[in-house]
Image (cartoon, protein in one colour):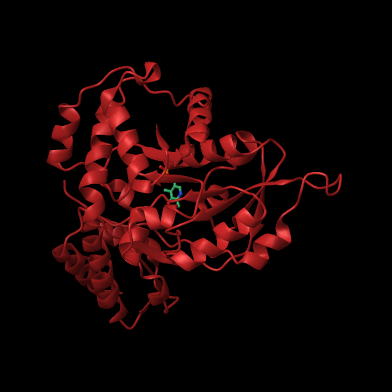
Length: 345
Ligand SMILES: *Cc1c(COP(=O)(O)O)cnc(C)c1O
């Protein structure tokens, strides 16, 4: 059965032309370095983000944690916004894998200010009580739907460089950020030393993310990927989808952003709904009901009966995500179904 699935852009199944590329992929054993399609994907990905080298990894969380594991010594400290995925949604992995401490900054929508970073930087030899800072992390696009502009990225990067610290960018949706800013993705990744981005979200690949950085960093990360159990064999079937994701799917994200805007406008017409228009930048619409009597659990069920999948509220907000499989007609069907639900209460 076909559902309209607004829960996330991770639900994007593969279009036929992507499946065909996967079916026809030339493969080898990538742990031996023999898979030509993985090699091609990694070279393409590195070029697109303007880094020397790249590594195919199983997931976004894997790529982020591998970055921390590669950049940081155990017991060191990573400065990061408290709302970032690495701290909020990766099961505390950084304490288990890299063995680092996360020093959270209470930021607004992931924006880190130079003064807030500087206040927290601590050095080896400064005081025997202090862990030393080993990395600064930034997330763009941010999970709130915000996009950090190039000045905001530069401020973080320049601050890090002033203290000789590396910057890791969690760019799970960096192509959405670049689309919103109308810049080349390189213009964003220019302000980091390593970047992770997902092929498996709005870009429609079934599995996989990329970690990119300089050659030395990626060589170290390749070995640690093996340690983490992420050495894959005939991964070329997945990499073939990744190549299509980069070459074709990354160029159409403005359609998803337009549909998100349309959805937001239509939802905002309903008196019971307040859309967060400040964070309407990518393919996500955040809103709340201004009427406490609305039972969102009942709404989730009502939508499901109408073949629409949504998540329940999180932190008081509903989130609808548009993607390759959400059309303009689907947007209107969603809004009409919501109107029906509200009128039947
Ligand atoms: C989804 C996401 C990740 C993790 O990606 P997975 O492939 O789900 O592990 C990391 N960071 C951000 C900002 C994300 O949105």
